[in-house]
Length: 131
Image 1: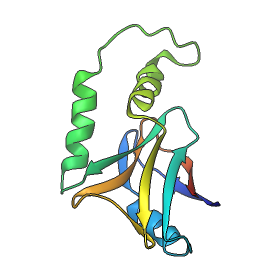
Image 2 (image 1 turned 180 degrees about the horizontal axis):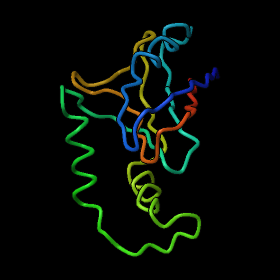
Image 3 (image 1 turned 90 degrees about the horizontal axis):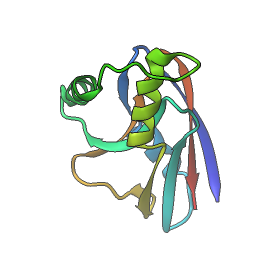
């Protein structure tokens, strides 16, 4: 098993960042013919998923999140205003696992691995593990 932690600096309150190339660079250094790549974010207001990132699609995702987030009086003790950020990070999820064959991520034609910032700007870390 091999592992790498990458740092991501976000620049906006909410942001979607394509991290596929960084992950593929790490995968290309591995010797296993067939393996699994697990990508995990250790933050409760950030998430990892796969997405189609045609131009503007990231903004579509963020507009959708904004549109469907209700305006409630949240009870979150630390800062009720960012309770939805925790909820969205939980809904999207903290991780994805992608098959790897011959040092290549096995993704669909339009599929990218994306980091979803819900409470930026911040410096975040993502753990990549190959087993």
